[in-house]
Length: 272
Ligand code: COA
Image (tube, rainbow, N blue to C red; front, side, top):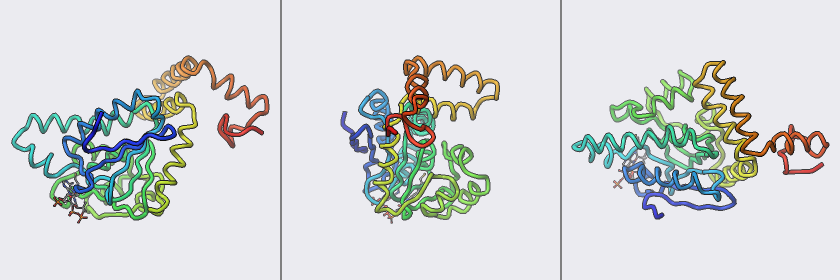
């Protein structure tokens, strides 16, 4: 499969997707949305992709929705506008959020508007200190539309969401980390190394346990306590089936034999 707006690199179990419209600051065009849907579908069933990293080519991570190709060019075509709107929200807020593999946003530069939903949809996010974030919609007389308002409500403290949403002021990677929008911010020169270190660590962990970790967290948020306890119990049995009870026999078993200390290291990473 070839893609015009995306690059794909696979190495050591890590699939790196690069939004590749640097001349347009990686703004999400209708074509990019369609290609992302296909690529995420391909990687879902690709055993060589254990962890996904999403980043941008050039000076931008993603300048949000394409203000020309989406908002302007599709205005006279309401059905096509609606179709693209649906898939644009679907892949960021559902496909990514419930993706069966760990996902990391690596924010290398400009990150505006609709790109906030992309970042929020990923499990983890690491940015360059030098990256520029902004809820720029208010600056062009819009509001954080589509899935963005919901993404803000999900992740940010109310004061921060309204501060940045209403003022539209840009902010850097360190502020993004301080307000909890991303996990951490590092100097640009260290961004790739830092992200790949985290991705490699995830790639070494049991994929079914990682999937259960994501799902246990994400679905519990939407459930009552009773439903969450029932779901968690069913999840535990699912894990037993999928792993052949490895978490008990190997994970706990090797600890009880004194072979490693799970509080300090992953199973298989080190022997005492
Ligand atoms: N949609 C469509 N095109 C975009 C875009 C977007 N969101 N963001 C940037 N581009 C295009 C510009 O129109 C320009 O195209 P051109 O070379 O054909 O004129 C090109 O990308 C480079 O942008 P430019 O403004 O010249 O670069 P810059 O480095 O001076 O500024 C930004 C970069 C991202 C700060 C600025 O382009 C910007 O504010 N973009 C809008 C961001 C935004 O509000 N996004 C929210 C969308 S929901």
